[in-house]
Length: 346
Ligand code: F6P
Image (cartoon, rainbow, N blue to C red; front, side, top):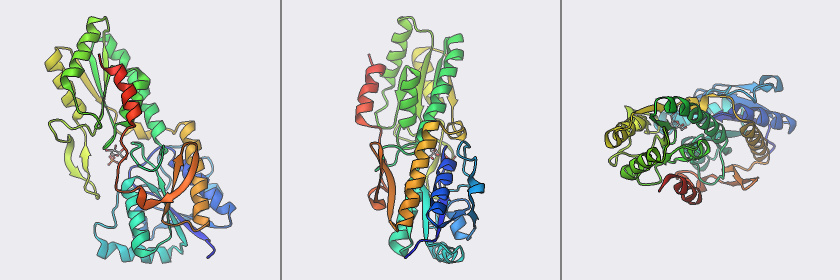
């Protein structure tokens, strides 16, 4: 079957370089003789049959912009499958699609994989996550930009921490994995990094800070991932949950700052970097990575490689079955953790 019309949707939280991805996929699809249809707001657009054809002019000049020109949502069609799955099938026909490229994290790709398996729709997956917690790929685009934003924030926060001789606890995004906190923390020379992959050792952390002060250091930066548990529980912002039943995280930085102050007597403050980590312009590295993913995914769709997703293995892109990658998370590499410990203990 010749693939003539391919939908593109961006689901889950947005990530820097989504627009670079969209531009590349649209250009490659048109180059391959197909048309590209931008689906609005993730899976919600498929349910509502909301999409429009994209021309090269629509995507010119967007590669450097953050966000996504298509819009994103955490809509989960499997939350109410009796109502929404028939609507997706109908939307697919109304939009005249032969294939769909779904870009997102584990939730979006989980829906893509299930739709392909249960309804036979021609779906190609692309991993995107600032958290970098998707298995199967060595690096998801958006991660590099988030690390850059977090590391720069830590660099800047060091100035005010130093001026007041304070400890600044910097809360980074990272629901299941501590990739951003760890990479940004190491890049910014933080005094300690706390990630969900390692048991939280408050006594060791406090010893480390106190020892650094005794050795002449006048301030400290502690990076913590939002998904770190305190007392065996995730710290949640407001008790709210999304369509995939994930709690909204937030607050671990504040609690940790209070604990450190209590145990060390040092003056502490906390900062939640939050959405600033995914709000800015993508780094050039992410723009190029997303461009390569976009071209590759478009070629997969044109070749009818459905039920598969594009992944980065070393420096090469490859197409692997989606079911091998969804439903699991990817922890911070053991090697990186080992290296990190060298800086943060003793
Ligand atoms: O995309 C994942 C993520 O960045 C998590 O780290 C964070 O918990 C979540 O998004 C917050 O996103 P939102 O506020 O859009 O629900």
